[in-house]
Image (cartoon, rainbow, N blue to C red):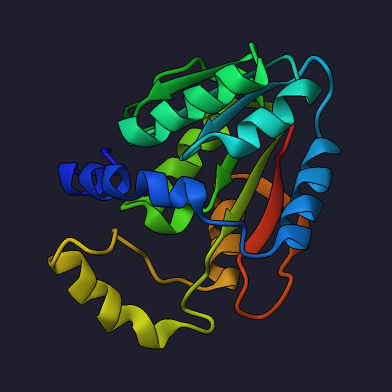
Length: 211
């Protein structure tokens, strides 16, 4: 199932440069997430990241793994990612313009899949979780960081709906942390790390595919 529309692409293309300039909201939490994720890497790890944006996280992880395949639906985001890649001299990351719903790879191809700040932007999260589970090797892990807006920010849903109608905001789904955990467990994952830095922060999960 396609997880994006042309309006989604236009939105993310339009804000790509601003997105690249904006500082990380919580640098300490971001660094901790990087550290925890790397606990699941080996030098031989093959990694897939969807919704990679301007590529910052993939490029930071690149020295710790064998290869990263990173996709995003925004051509303008990826243009910035490739510029950053060239500046950093990183050679083991492949950036590709693609929608997760149309991404083709072999079953069991990846040791780790990253879905960071993206699950709440998908039109069919359940389809994506099944796809991610299929892409992972037995024992592989899915690392996600997700805004679970139904827990503490449900009141902004009408604002986002209006923003979508006028093209100023992206598609956003509202769901709780517990629901997200249940959905991942339902497709065959075991949650092995669960962290929320503060009540209105994104939920960071590491979910292992059962052997």
